Image (tube, rainbow, N blue to C red; front, side, top):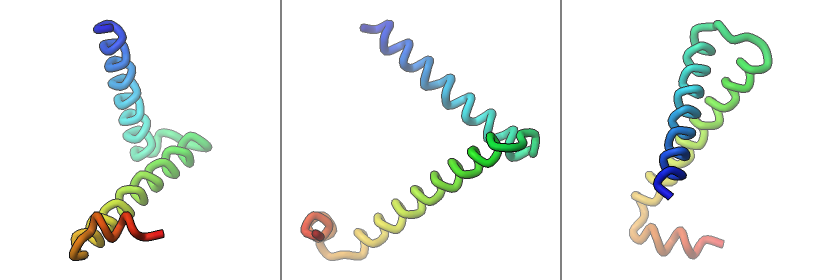
Length: 74
């Protein structure tokens, strides 16, 4: 089981490094075409998710009882 977890960890690290490399190359203008558009779209989606999450956290922080109010919303 230890080897499985180690393999999963290595795969995750490789994916993160590859994503960082693609992002860096795209920001420098080296990548062109559909891959560049895809990276831009993924970046925008991640920023939107982050923004919506922060908005939700701020909204819940402004409520008197945030957990109960968020559960009772239909």
